[in-house]
Length: 333
Image 1 (cartoon, one colour):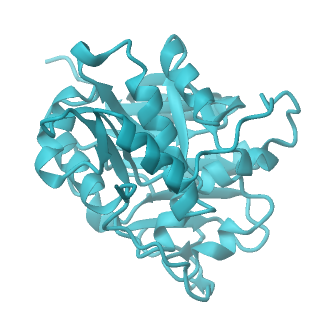
Image 2 (cartoon, helix red, strand yellow):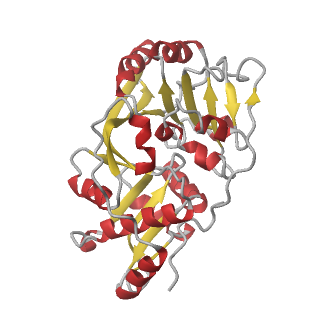
Image 3 (cartoon, one colour):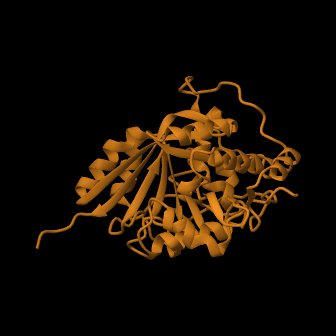
């Protein structure tokens, strides 16, 4: 049996020659002095030694056809201070869809970020939206902006697990959990394990998007189904199936290279199936794309997921991953 291709719709070819696409002096319509990085030029920024690779993980997908229409903005080049990645404006049309209305932020100067957020219309604060960052110390800036704009903040703080190729971005913190890991299994080893198991692995199909969405903790309306379906259609995924072909455990890749939406049906839990699935998924990603910057975040109390991440060869980073969901305060009538 051949090992499943978790990214059957995904472009595995390396990106073409990169180029810098400077915009005249400002990102049109945002008031944000910036250079725009699209599918041809994102590798310039990705290769820059001062950009943390986890903070620039959407570049990998942008450089491979940009299937989810992302863009990356910097305040200047090459001496930039702030990097923001987000969907293109044409994608952010639903004011209630915070799954899509998501901004990933990295800055070397919090005051520079404050100036950008206060003085540009890069972010549509009238929408339900989410800000993401590896830099928890940005919280005073985010809270100050939210207060000035009358927004309510909901904070989500998680543990971050990365693949070892990206440990160099944490030079300021030597306490990275870097104990030796076993080499990931080869393709032939994965195929042999498939032959020995009653449960087979294959990518999640488009027809199974509603099932994945129904069990996703963040689900709640049609926007989450759209978000789920698009990622199944365009990015790598993997599920474990029972002998009848029914999905029993799965995980999906998102636009920022996060492995998410992981779920195992209750009757199949406590059997190590998700750990096996995650080991297989990360091994296949490594085999097909040597430079794939995938990562996993877990709730602080989810010890089982943390053990699975370690077994899959992912390393716990010293930085915690923070999400701020921003919404307009309801006015009293």
